Length: 415
Ligand code: ADP
Image (cartoon, rainbow, N blue to C red; front, top):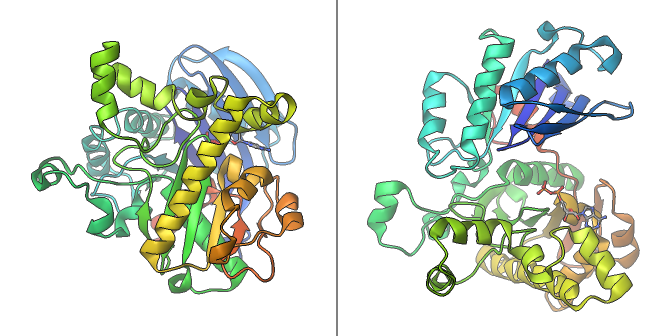
């Protein structure tokens, strides 16, 4: 089956076309046929598409909304000169898999989308006001443009964390707030963590129940996950993605009284505080330069910029703190696994995160660590290291495509 995987953000649409099926999954032989992104949906949009193995097609065009963006994607995918293999008309798209950010407590696995599921996703808008409306727009647009005969599946970023115990997901707030609003930790990056657990299992030959790792998704958004017995038992993002690690523009953990202080001293409304915490903090806030880790590393190296160094150091210290906390919660683990744009590409950040962890048995192999960049999966700890370290390039789209096939064929799986 050719599955169109869609990831709709508030002003962007990312996609992949993945050829997969139950037999291809069992052989780990699925094929990506095309991928692309449209940014700045709603104004002069930036388009970058590519068929597998072909150079990128780039252009800019005004695209009014998500429907117009999806229409543009579909027209490109089926056009002869795009060079997408195996797809020459819309009937060659057999299913759609959507990344949906928030599934609340209702969705603990991917589901086939029908009207009741759409209602369920609408019900979680209160918990994810920025993300879920965009996901719904993508679902509606796909229904309209591909017709009701093409099955659509929703895969939730929160679902993998539905196994967390109450001790991890409840906030120590008055309990009735949880009862009334389902106010609790949900966690995100779930599909990425599930992929890491799966790939780690293939790399080490372990069974799902023997996967005990601290997984670190370090990108512009960043979170940590304690995976014990193959299941998420704790994660650093919370009711929203704001909690936990330091991120590109999000501050992560801090005293909630900061919000009140800013309200009084700076006269900020709660919306303004929310914007400050989500968009102006983190690496950008500390450095005053950029949210981009690669630029900060360059700035530190070339100009010795003090605040660039501070931003990187605070980022790494927070990650290290979570590794320690999760190892304590889990009663130890077998490996720490890095992924995301920073985790997959920056040997420097990995080395700085792991520095000083030798006492608990984690020693990186400098040469292996340096070589593990650019999407390569590798073990990066030394042979003697008791706690191993791995780099695994995440592939959420692949899992979404596989989930779509499994659900459509009546063989859903958590793994
Ligand atoms: P998103 O959360 O938006 O998916 P990504 O996973 O693409 O983000 O990660 C983006 C981050 O990865 C940026 O901070 C970028 O600077 C960083 N990054 C990418 N390549 C490198 C590299 N070679 N060295 C350091 N950081 C890198």
